[in-house]
Length: 164
Image 1 (cartoon, rainbow, N blue to C red):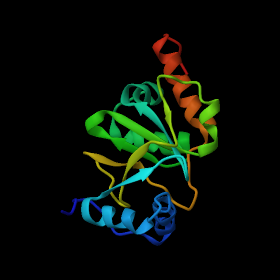
Image 2 (cartoon, helix red, strand yellow; image 1 turned 135 degrees about the vertical axis):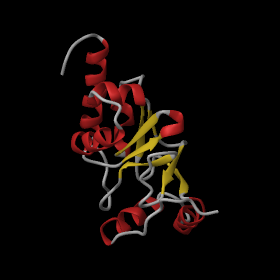
Image 3 (tube, rainbow, N blue to C red; image 1 turned 90 degrees about the horizontal axis):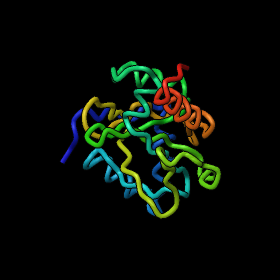
Image 4 (tube, rainbow, N blue to C red; image 1 turned 45 degrees about the horizontal axis):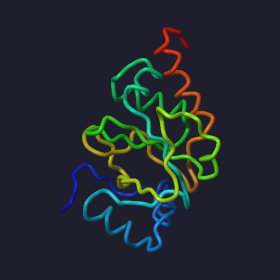
């Protein structure tokens, strides 16, 4: 079963996806999953963690729900890869693994060791289903935790009537 809208790996992100695949004990399994279904199930806590951001938080922070504007704004604000799970109305910012203990945003939990994340193949850029809002561009390309925290704090301010 092959998913549509999966583009070929480009030279720039080929190494990024190889690095992601190495989160699995057997990286070739991730490559098979991407090739066969467009999505690989990768363990968190080894190479990266994931901050779960509801669409409500993201849209409040960026000021719109227009997906192209959201993706461009996330690329600028988070400076790292972000997965959009449109059926679940969730975004997943990929972040470094060492920050789990410092994370204090219950409305946007950070998932790490013992959890798994569905990671789309390179070139799978939506707008429907599970896709990249912002694709990784190089090895170890992750969102800085302070940038993700600032995004959540911005949404908190919007909910309380404060403007950015």
